[in-house]
Amino acid sequence: MAVTTRVMKDLTPRQVFDVLRDGYSYGDWVVGTRHIRTVDAAWPDEGAKLHYTVGYGPLRKDDETVVLVSAPDTRLEVEARAWPAGTAHIAITAEAAEGGTLVSIDEKPHRGPAKLLHNPLLDLVVKARNVETLRRLEAKAAGRR
Image (cartoon, rainbow, N blue to C red; front, side):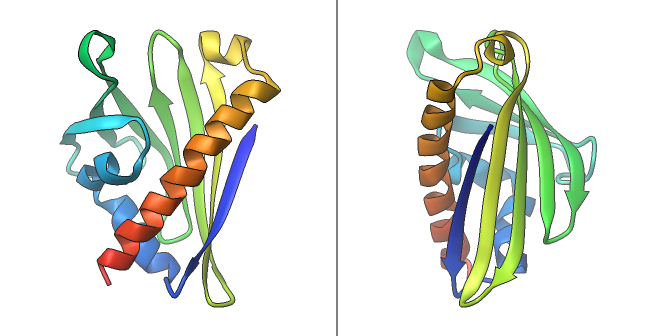
């Protein structure tokens, strides 16, 4: 399990979730997402999907993320597909903290080979990726103020 947190200074949970509600913004802040192809009109309601492209050149792959849980301005849980590697369960939470908002990403393999190969080294890679993802999310949210 790879949990990554960041206090986003001078931002409210609503400002952070304004970015999360904009499915087309995910290509700007989610590390590894190359392009958002389409977003269901119901995003981020439960069951809604975000369709994206990851990778470059011959290693490019089209896939999707589906919303599992959506609690406005507090929690978003999704299952992100990255076949043939499998899927990841990702929970993003936001709560008011002194001087801003504490945002957490809890990401773990859910299905497929990635779940079978899950190990502490993989957790370190995911954590490093999510440190940058949260940095980008904060910049995106701050830019919308």
